[in-house]
Amino acid sequence: MPIVPTQEILARAFRDRYGVAAINVINDLSMEAVLAAAEELRAPVIVQTSVKHVQMTGIDATYAMWVAYASKASVPAALHLDHCPDRKVISDCLARGWNSVLFDASRLSVEENQRQCIEVVEEARRYGALVEGEIEGFKRTEEMTGGEAEDVQSLETVVRFVGATGVDVFAPAIGNAHGTYRTAPRLDAGRVTDIVAATGKPVALHGGTGMSAGQFADLISRGCAKVNISTALKVAYLSAGFDYLTAHPGEFDPPKVFAAQRAAVKDMAERHIRMFGSEGRAWQ
Ligand code: 13P
Figure 1 (cartoon, rainbow, N blue to C red):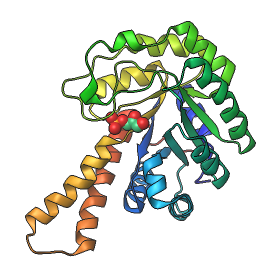
Figure 2 (figure 1 turned 60 degrees about the vertical axis):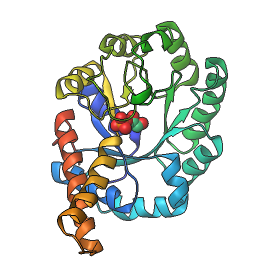
Figure 3 (figure 1 turned 90 degrees about the vertical axis):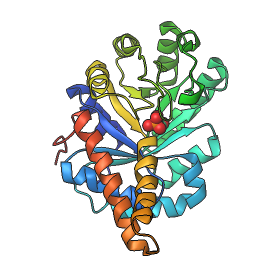
């Protein structure tokens, strides 16, 4: 049971309108802590890897770690490759066993993105893997200008892209961004409703760190079945290490620092799982 297709995890969440936490991990400790949080709350979960961290650790080591931890879990879990513009990394991860990938060709024209995305979907299908697509790209929070509404594509373009490529989930720009929001983000929730109604597919919510419980609940009820969290994990992990060392000057005992970091990451993951309504949603 533990490792299940991302399609199955998202289909149930989309149908029953809860959000699955899709949390970017950075190493073995954070991967184990996220899975432990899901296990404790009986929640399905998506563990995300960024291209940077896959390359830092290596595909084989990352996957071996995943199998070692996830095969012990008793809740549904899937491994996802986040924002990847590199076709070779996508191919390598799919061949190795990742359950899903986000092909991020948002820097290309929509036409070229669509052409390549069709190939990625075809490749992923051979492995039973899911593909997430995007055409708008996400800013970092520090780059937000307030004029983001002008950067989005029309609903017609989104529908054409989703239909032509067959992507399973679409990641729209709705005023969200990666990083730490300086002020509460103003999100175009209506765009989620329109995209879900027009495509019949779930939406992936990016830039989750710093959104409010009310924003999550509203967006999830509209069809955001996959909710991405990355910055919150980095902050929890690194701050816990810093705080521990600051509170224990001169004590350089790695297991104690790691225990504090694990607890902080697990707590962060549990907080988000609860907010997304996926607690208790694991199935047998
Ligand atoms: P945050 O870093 O803002 O949580 O965004 C996560 C994300 O969308 C990863 O793709």
